[in-house]
Image (cartoon, rainbow, N blue to C red; front, side, top):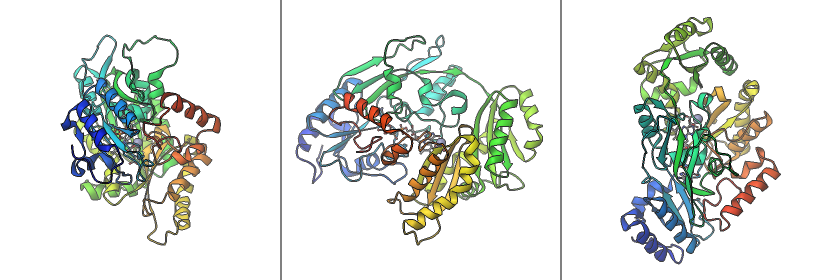
Length: 471
Ligand code: FAD
Ligand code: 2HG
Ligand code: ZN
């Protein structure tokens, strides 16, 4: 291991100790090896690190945390590095003179046999969601979380962010799948409860405390997860609608008819056009619409036929086979990639009550324009893309144009969501991106309680300092 220049004192000693614990080949300090660990998926967040370390067991994670604590180095836990709020990479402004170590969980890939009696499985933190889903499917069961980053996002990362995704309306977010956890606390102690008992009522629920903790309380190493009966999709449909109010109403109409509704997603014409430019896909419908509702229903063929006959679905593309369904999903799932191909976006992930979603959308463009101008945005008008999980009231607002380093537009969108009774984070979490705006969605008493938990479990501020809680 070669230490880089300009590193804090003690760095060489820490690199040596880490190599002794996990093996030289799992301590990456050379800039070209380190680069993939220090910049996030969006390219908006990046920072320097002493090294990335890749422990291969909970015991090695504990040894890494003890070594880092001994040198007062900060630790940034990282799974698939698909997080969208800057929480999986080191801070851009350094860590107040502390060295930073990225702790990658990607080697923690044990995947136990599916327990068909309990419908549960035990999975290492580094297992990807795609691998977990395939493993469950091979046993005739399903994992409840599904998201476009499935090939890279990990079990540990999705627990740490309490990830949502396209099936949240049916199965809940990641915390609803979580039955037990093994994790390493900042002092190196290992807490482990992986029995998966459906009835176990003994005190504080540490697994649930870690769901959504964003790497600030512990490093998750293994999880016991709930599985669901597999429900083959009966139909996927993409319906043209006149706007967001119509999309919300159509989703409610479908839900009333089809209890197996498991995805209700929203896209707009601008985003669909962008996806088409990237992918070469044809227009989804013969007559373009200003917006679209993408719905997926599991159930019987009868149900699918009843739905297809709905007059409000006259303007819909309907697919019942896997290839046709995947083609419709591409219009929705390739938004993130298509937007990133144009530049570094400002990404907001708000939710508002469905009753307020049309009012929020109506005020959004003007709020973004005013904020961009207020920030001295003499450049081109900001481009606003809105899409998301409308069944959960969750809208992704992506803005291209304003300087990625300027948070004025981000704050304006989050304030607008708060004014409409919404939240600043529906599923991506707070990370570094929104820590300063926590007060828009949590009261001073709630923030004080969160700080007390953090101080009790991590008194030395070892784990992900600056993430989730404002510094
Ligand atoms: P990382 O990005 O590596 O880390 C995320 C956070 O978790 C960081 O704060 C990190 O410190 C912490 N962390 C990671 N592993 C651990 C661990 N083992 N122990 C403790 N802390 C840990 N998110 C959604 O919610 N819904 C979506 O539909 C969705 N779609 C996406 C689509 C695309 C194309 C992309 C790029 C991202 C999407 N995301 C979505 C965001 C992202 O995939 C999720 O936040 C995911 O949960 C991150 O998992 P990860 O393994 O990549 O974690
Ligand atoms: C999605 O639902 C993800 O596709 C990503 O949560 C959202 O790119 C985004 O802003
Ligand atoms: Zn999403």
